[in-house]
Length: 198
Image (cartoon, rainbow, N blue to C red; front, side, top):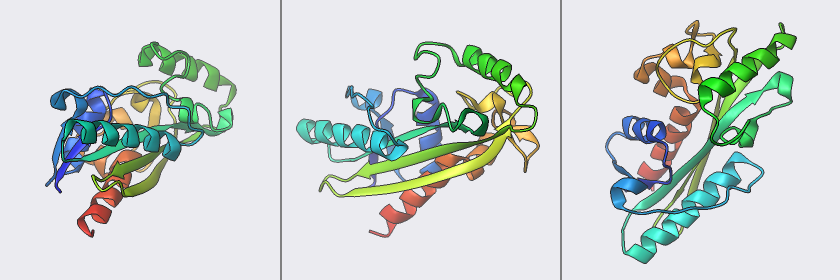
């Protein structure tokens, strides 16, 4: 079983999954003509990823599509905000609010914290196999909130997430650099190893 369908409508995530999961046939729900809508009401990244992956797995089974259903839930945890936005990252300041506006508001709020600018990206990935067995992984990448947005790559909060080891924001990294150190890249590498070893 080398086919995976990703439970996301986020084109940036689809691109990263395909880049990282080399050797797998990776498609999106859109490419499969499948639509699954679920309420992400979990209190952890893992719970939300599980909700999405299991709902997609059921839909694939109903459609007779033999593939692994895979989903992630990820977000930004800011130390000065007690870990917020966390699991609410996509819905933070309004689900339809563009990220350049969200990033600008966060940077304004962070002016109160000239020292405590620590942050991390966290990601949980869950894969549900056709036999209903579940494989899970979790990873983080540590960084800080930048003083201003920078970079054109990535998506979401990447322009304001500063990666000390590169002295750049996540949005300034090349795709290969980002995938090598990112929360999603690390979690997907773990999933890949777990699935390859089955």
